[in-house]
Length: 537
Ligand SMILES: Cc1cc2nc3c(=O)[nH]c(=O)nc-3n(C[C@H](O)[C@H](O)[C@H](O)COP(=O)(O)OP(=O)(O)OC[C@H]3O[C@@H](n4cnc5c(N)ncnc54)[C@H](O)[C@@H]3O)c2cc1C
Ligand SMILES: *[C@@H]1O[C@H](CO)[C@@H](O)[C@H](O)[C@H]1NC(C)=O
Ligand SMILES: *[C@@H]1O[C@H](CO)[C@@H](O)[C@H](O)[C@H]1NC(C)=O
Ligand SMILES: *[C@@H]1O[C@H](CO)[C@@H](O)[C@H](O)[C@H]1NC(C)=O
Ligand SMILES: *[C@@H]1O[C@H](CO)[C@@H](O)[C@H](O)[C@H]1NC(C)=O
Image (tube, rainbow, N blue to C red; front, side):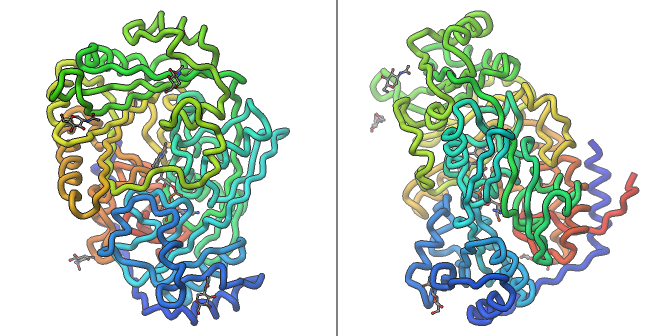
């Protein structure tokens, strides 16, 4: 881990580069004229182009997939216009015209970015949005174990369309069905199959991307460096991804799902301590995470901590019970806690729906409750001692409805090298810890919830990974730093860059400089284009 020397090197390099980004006030008419002139096929603007002044539907389109309500508050900057391409050539034209007319652009697939970067720019106004929600075709090829999926599809649609063709094929990606395939896969994409098959990004065969010049490149045309960078290096830095070719994986016809809940009065601490050692090391057919909440206890007026173990075993209940009896009898799993079902029916359950939920819910595109949120995350590499848990609960319970989710790693995740893809959090990670802070009444409670999660995150420092304190790009967190597109910008990027990517950050910077030296694709945490020497060591 050569982070200190790499950091020095970046400090040096940023002096050499100069950035300038001057966006003129965008004129919608000039933009649509430019689109028409540069698109291979005609563009029906009456279904694809929205300005706040001319189109009543502007607000509903802006809000459509925006997941974090904090970034829809009136105080947040709004785009000058939104373009929703219907085909690839429209995306090419949009890139060419954004470049030509110097309009800062944001790209949105599923709108689930934690910090709203796909539809809000905090650092540059005016800006526009290219919203890819209408590019959402899914073509499944069971004979070849592959599928082509367009970026505007949700991951739930991908799961569902695969299951329509085969009950024993699946794709390892996120648990939340409404996340977009565009941002999700390019940021990594973990889920309930990652212990068995790795990340979504680990299971990509090919991709099509529109580069800064408006050309469409597939894997062969883009080359292995860029193909590496877009599988984990994150959206909005390298180009606009149009579609992914994904590799399907095998699941058995019957899987087993279960939930076990334990409160402090039911020995939660001892069991959670053991979980940290068992869950990352057990048979990789088993994935079971822990949701930790503050709840009312059975003693009136008293609160307690509730740990819920929610899991899926890729096999029958008999085998799961054998495994648990041998490895984790303390959890007390019994036959009546287990439900055998198909893989596709287990998907809504793992995300938190009742066990009777029909898989059709996966194609409803908007199924997550929209809330105001500020989440943060950690990677844990050392078991948190049992005696530390009570002091953690004390801080945890300082808000009405506290929530944490502990997601086990290990298995395939430990067998893929740290530099295979930009996503570096592999061997040695026991689990990922997500701090969830959500509220419903907007500005009113915002400070309270933001402060709680920030303070709790600081409190957890001794238990988190360090040098760097690792962070997950798809759980984007602007507290880690922001680009500023002036002389200080590249210095700040190295602080969050190493947290998200460890030393892969250096290679990402090099790729960025090769493919987008003028920094057309940029945002608060995009990869900076620096002319790094290749012989830095
Ligand atoms: C409720 C919820 C649950 C989640 N659950 C999981 C989970 O189980 N596992 C997991 O790994 N993550 C999870 N995430 C995080 C999720 O993976 C990221 O937010 C991801 O970036 C979402 O992709 P998107 O297309 O929906 O987001 P968007 O907001 O559309 O985009 C995210 C980023 O990628 C860029 N981008 C979008 N599309 C493209 C494109 N086509 N080409 C280039 N850049 C693009 C955007 O500009 C933005 O910077 C969850 C998030 C939420 C809100
Ligand atoms: C939005 O308004 C512009 C300008 O009047 C128009 O050209 C376009 O068709 C409108 N778009 C929609 C979706 O109605
Ligand atoms: C928990 O208890 C408080 C007061 O004791 C009460 O107001 C609240 O509704 C209870 N919550 C639940 C989920 O029962
Ligand atoms: C399925 O859900 C129902 C309703 O919540 C519950 O009563 C039942 O115990 C659950 N079954 C299993 C096996 O978890
Ligand atoms: C860079 O920009 C930020 C805001 O975008 C500003 O706060 C800061 O002072 C600027 N720094 C310099 C050196 O201009």
